[in-house]
Amino acid sequence: MSSPREAGDVKLISSVFSAREALIDATIGQMERIFGPADWISQVLPFDRTRYYEREMGWPLLRRFLSFRDLIRPGSLVEIKLKTNDLEGKYAQGSKRRVNIDPGYVTLERLVLATGKNYTHRIYLAKGIYADLTLIFHRGSFIPLRWTYKDYADPKVIGYFNLVRERYKQQMKEVAGQG
Image (cartoon, rainbow, N blue to C red; front, side):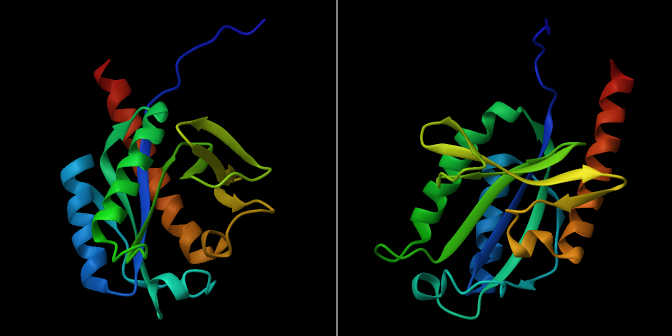
Protein backbone atom coordinates (compact mmCIF):
# COMPACT_ATOMS: atom_id res chain seq x y z
CA MET A 1 0.00 0.00 0.00
CA SER A 2 1.31 3.45 -0.82
CA SER A 3 1.38 6.13 1.85
CA PRO A 4 -0.01 9.44 0.61
CA ARG A 5 2.35 12.41 0.87
CA GLU A 6 1.82 16.02 -0.05
CA ALA A 7 3.42 17.11 -3.31
CA GLY A 8 6.25 19.60 -3.12
CA ASP A 9 6.13 23.15 -4.36
CA VAL A 10 6.27 23.74 -8.11
CA LYS A 11 7.45 26.53 -10.43
CA LEU A 12 4.66 28.71 -11.83
CA ILE A 13 5.03 29.43 -15.54
CA SER A 14 2.82 31.05 -18.14
CA SER A 15 2.44 31.88 -21.79
CA VAL A 16 0.95 35.23 -22.79
CA PHE A 17 0.04 36.03 -26.37
CA SER A 18 -1.71 38.84 -28.19
CA ALA A 19 -1.60 40.80 -31.43
CA ARG A 20 -0.19 43.74 -29.43
CA GLU A 21 3.21 43.56 -27.74
CA ALA A 22 2.28 46.40 -25.36
CA LEU A 23 -0.72 44.38 -24.17
CA ILE A 24 1.52 41.36 -23.51
CA ASP A 25 3.81 43.52 -21.39
CA ALA A 26 0.88 45.10 -19.52
CA THR A 27 -0.55 41.65 -18.83
CA ILE A 28 2.77 40.41 -17.49
CA GLY A 29 2.87 43.45 -15.19
CA GLN A 30 -0.62 42.62 -13.91
CA MET A 31 0.36 38.99 -13.39
CA GLU A 32 3.41 40.06 -11.37
CA ARG A 33 1.14 42.11 -9.11
CA ILE A 34 -1.03 39.03 -8.55
CA PHE A 35 1.54 36.19 -8.45
CA GLY A 36 4.77 37.95 -7.50
CA PRO A 37 7.77 38.90 -9.62
CA ALA A 38 8.82 37.03 -12.73
CA ASP A 39 12.32 35.62 -12.58
CA TRP A 40 12.53 34.99 -16.33
CA ILE A 41 10.71 36.36 -19.37
CA SER A 42 11.40 35.16 -22.91
CA GLN A 43 12.01 37.37 -25.86
CA VAL A 44 8.98 38.15 -28.00
CA LEU A 45 8.25 35.19 -30.25
CA PRO A 46 5.85 34.77 -33.17
CA PHE A 47 2.78 32.74 -32.30
CA ASP A 48 2.44 31.17 -35.72
CA ARG A 49 1.99 27.40 -35.29
CA THR A 50 -1.80 27.75 -35.54
CA ARG A 51 -4.27 30.34 -36.79
CA TYR A 52 -6.94 29.08 -34.35
CA TYR A 53 -7.12 32.44 -32.52
CA GLU A 54 -6.96 34.73 -35.59
CA ARG A 55 -10.69 35.53 -35.84
CA GLU A 56 -10.88 36.37 -32.16
CA MET A 57 -7.56 38.12 -31.58
CA GLY A 58 -6.25 39.25 -34.98
CA TRP A 59 -3.03 38.45 -36.80
CA PRO A 60 -0.08 38.27 -36.49
CA LEU A 61 0.11 37.11 -32.89
CA LEU A 62 3.11 37.49 -30.58
CA ARG A 63 3.99 35.52 -27.46
CA ARG A 64 6.17 35.61 -24.40
CA PHE A 65 6.79 32.83 -21.89
CA LEU A 66 7.63 33.57 -18.27
CA SER A 67 8.31 31.94 -14.94
CA PHE A 68 7.73 33.37 -11.50
CA ARG A 69 10.16 33.58 -8.62
CA ASP A 70 7.79 32.36 -5.92
CA LEU A 71 7.07 28.65 -5.88
CA ILE A 72 3.45 27.53 -5.56
CA ARG A 73 1.51 24.53 -4.33
CA PRO A 74 0.37 22.44 -7.32
CA GLY A 75 -3.19 22.45 -5.99
CA SER A 76 -3.35 26.22 -6.46
CA LEU A 77 -3.33 25.86 -10.26
CA VAL A 78 -7.15 25.97 -10.41
CA GLU A 79 -7.36 29.34 -8.65
CA ILE A 80 -4.46 30.69 -10.71
CA LYS A 81 -6.23 29.74 -13.96
CA LEU A 82 -9.45 31.36 -12.76
CA LYS A 83 -7.53 34.56 -11.95
CA THR A 84 -5.87 34.58 -15.38
CA ASN A 85 -9.28 34.04 -16.99
CA ASP A 86 -10.52 37.12 -15.11
CA LEU A 87 -7.50 39.08 -16.34
CA GLU A 88 -8.21 38.03 -19.94
CA GLY A 89 -11.76 39.28 -19.44
CA LYS A 90 -10.58 42.69 -18.23
CA TYR A 91 -8.71 43.23 -21.50
CA ALA A 92 -11.46 41.79 -23.74
CA GLN A 93 -13.47 43.86 -26.19
CA GLY A 94 -16.97 42.49 -25.97
CA SER A 95 -16.76 38.72 -26.32
CA LYS A 96 -13.35 38.82 -28.02
CA ARG A 97 -10.20 38.33 -26.02
CA ARG A 98 -7.28 40.58 -26.83
CA VAL A 99 -4.84 38.53 -24.75
CA ASN A 100 -4.56 34.82 -23.98
CA ILE A 101 -2.90 33.60 -20.77
CA ASP A 102 -1.97 29.96 -20.27
CA PRO A 103 -0.61 29.30 -16.77
CA GLY A 104 0.96 26.06 -15.67
CA TYR A 105 3.87 24.72 -13.71
CA VAL A 106 7.20 22.98 -14.06
CA THR A 107 8.48 20.20 -11.81
CA LEU A 108 11.55 18.05 -12.18
CA GLU A 109 9.40 15.47 -13.99
CA ARG A 110 6.90 17.43 -16.08
CA LEU A 111 5.34 20.61 -17.44
CA VAL A 112 1.60 20.90 -16.81
CA LEU A 113 -0.73 23.53 -18.26
CA ALA A 114 -4.15 24.55 -16.94
CA THR A 115 -7.08 24.64 -19.36
CA GLY A 116 -10.83 24.92 -19.34
CA LYS A 117 -11.11 22.48 -22.22
CA ASN A 118 -11.64 18.77 -21.63
CA TYR A 119 -9.91 16.18 -23.80
CA THR A 120 -8.96 12.51 -23.48
CA HIS A 121 -5.52 13.14 -21.91
CA ARG A 122 -6.62 15.93 -19.56
CA ILE A 123 -7.43 15.33 -15.92
CA TYR A 124 -10.23 17.27 -14.24
CA LEU A 125 -9.05 19.27 -11.22
CA ALA A 126 -11.96 21.45 -10.02
CA LYS A 127 -14.17 24.42 -10.95
CA GLY A 128 -14.11 23.61 -14.67
CA ILE A 129 -10.30 23.45 -14.89
CA TYR A 130 -8.27 20.54 -16.27
CA ALA A 131 -4.57 19.67 -16.08
CA ASP A 132 -2.84 19.08 -19.41
CA LEU A 133 0.36 17.04 -19.19
CA THR A 134 2.30 18.88 -21.90
CA LEU A 135 5.96 17.83 -21.57
CA ILE A 136 7.79 15.14 -19.61
CA PHE A 137 11.44 15.15 -18.57
CA HIS A 138 13.37 12.19 -19.96
CA ARG A 139 17.11 11.61 -20.38
CA GLY A 140 18.19 15.17 -19.74
CA SER A 141 15.48 17.17 -21.50
CA PHE A 142 11.79 17.81 -21.69
CA ILE A 143 10.16 15.87 -24.50
CA PRO A 144 6.76 16.33 -26.13
CA LEU A 145 3.95 13.81 -26.07
CA ARG A 146 1.68 12.80 -28.91
CA TRP A 147 -0.84 15.53 -27.95
CA THR A 148 1.63 18.31 -27.09
CA TYR A 149 0.86 21.57 -28.88
CA LYS A 150 3.32 22.14 -31.74
CA ASP A 151 4.61 25.37 -30.22
CA TYR A 152 5.48 23.65 -26.92
CA ALA A 153 7.18 20.85 -28.87
CA ASP A 154 9.47 23.35 -30.62
CA PRO A 155 13.14 22.69 -29.67
CA LYS A 156 13.69 26.38 -28.80
CA VAL A 157 10.71 26.38 -26.43
CA ILE A 158 11.81 23.07 -24.91
CA GLY A 159 15.22 24.70 -24.35
CA TYR A 160 13.52 27.55 -22.49
CA PHE A 161 11.70 25.16 -20.21
CA ASN A 162 14.84 23.11 -19.59
CA LEU A 163 16.39 26.36 -18.28
CA VAL A 164 13.30 27.07 -16.15
CA ARG A 165 13.58 23.53 -14.77
CA GLU A 166 17.22 24.15 -13.85
CA ARG A 167 16.22 27.34 -12.04
CA TYR A 168 13.50 25.41 -10.20
CA LYS A 169 15.98 22.64 -9.32
CA GLN A 170 18.32 25.24 -7.82
CA GLN A 171 15.45 26.78 -5.83
CA MET A 172 14.54 23.37 -4.45
CA LYS A 173 18.18 22.82 -3.36
CA GLU A 174 18.16 26.20 -1.61
CA VAL A 175 14.90 25.35 0.19
CA ALA A 176 16.27 21.94 1.25
CA GLY A 177 19.42 23.62 2.56
CA GLN A 178 17.33 25.87 4.81
CA GLY A 179 15.47 22.92 6.37
